[in-house]
Length: 166
Image (cartoon, rainbow, N blue to C red; front, top):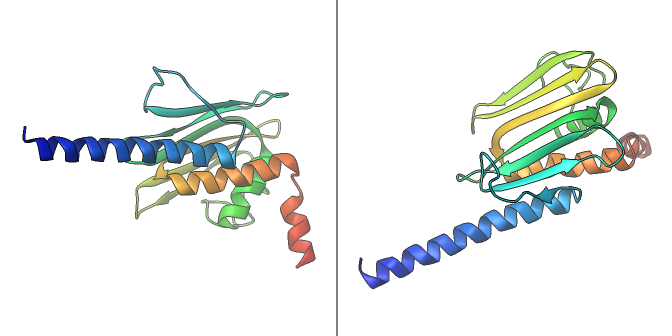
């Protein structure tokens, strides 16, 4: 291989790895409870995991080779998940949730983005819990949701207070 091509490939690889690291850092800034998983991580080279300190909620976020992100959180308190999703999307985005995810009863609610192939699924479980399964979306969208989840965990009524003040 010619030396200038080899150098260009090395430069590209370095920038690619820096972009993956930056995406993981962005996720941890948005949701500081995420911790890096050690290899092997499963589906993606970059995978962050989370376990709620005092509860049963767990999950992971991963960034694939195409810089798309996947989030899978299980047993999140429904009011927390609903508040974050409604803040990010507004009510009515998920099929069957005209009043928003926070007000949705038990069931599976779905939304897909035809532009990038992202799939968002929320399952509201008995007992006030919800599972979030979001696949193939851009990392910034996942970071936005993670920030909403962090805020909702800290104060599930924070967004309502902001709405009432305006």
